[in-house]
Length: 480
Image: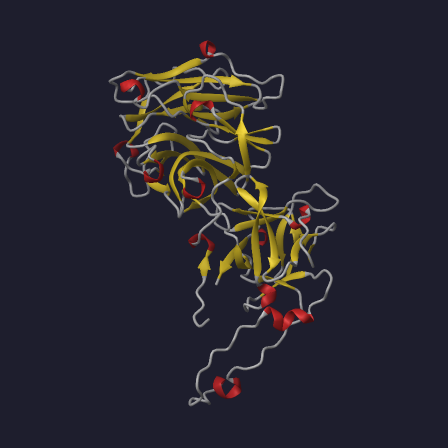
């Protein structure tokens, strides 16, 4: 209890894997259709989720080979995958294929992808070629151009341009462009004037011994060259780390990006080995944080006890109870130079049992105030078995109690004496692209409006519309 060390959430363990049955390898970028989330992996195996946190086995797409990717173009979904490659059959002959589907919902009468014979070949490699046409990655540029990247360690990563209307290869490029080496499972994303090429580096398919990690370079052109943060070209082996292993999870690969809204982005990928699920390959979704112009994997908040700190001024969310003074301390003599001979003692922290008897029995409001590590400022986060894309819902209670943070019908905040699991008592916590966090109730009684926790001035807390450019919408979680 002597030295108190501030620990940022970004330095702690986090909730990283999805729950349910999230078992997949080489997942496609997550796609949303009619309120559900979908992804597919090698062999066409699918996962589906109602909320983005709990995943179950989904419909298998027939005749899909290795490492598919998916992108929505207009009101259709373009699927790209490789029919072979990766050294299968003793060589590196591979083929990249595309096709469109109208819906991802297998219960819809419009569901289905064309039979294999009607799908379109857009790239290929020969047995002894210095490229292996596998691991397709799709991007639609802001100008409406469609590109596909492909390749593995067996030579170059290449790209070519496709027709967004048909998915077929265009003749804008005389030949495929070499854009990287020493990686695989590539894709491109666009952010703030740059195209970022993300690739998977390290060893694949070796369970807990896999060393897969995700790296990137960037260019002002979709055709490269892609240069990393220290000036290395990815075609010469460069690449800045985006995500490596984390405690209990190893083999991060097959990056996909989902933009929820301005300031809220997620990356999907697989862990080649999830130590907490028998070392199986599992789907994972983490926040994307943009730091100094580069993407990196963020952190979901780990269940535990925190100060919830407003980004506006650094004040802490607290239960609005009467301030209870503490006895003890050096007193005036110690403060102004007296009492030098007084023996040092450790002053105990104020405890919950010292103050809880003075708290009202019903609902209690919340506010923001400077943090003094008092019981009414310590919040416990408990992850629930439901959530939103990439993050669980949390119950947020005063540590040591069941008094829960809740939204009210008037779009205000309160705490209720007992957590019941009602939607207004469940909170999503999304890390934003600047590293701060957004806190939103699952529901507000009497309205469907989406709101988040906000600070008003220096001392009030309420609910309001999220605006990434408004510092009042942003919070930090601190552990001591």
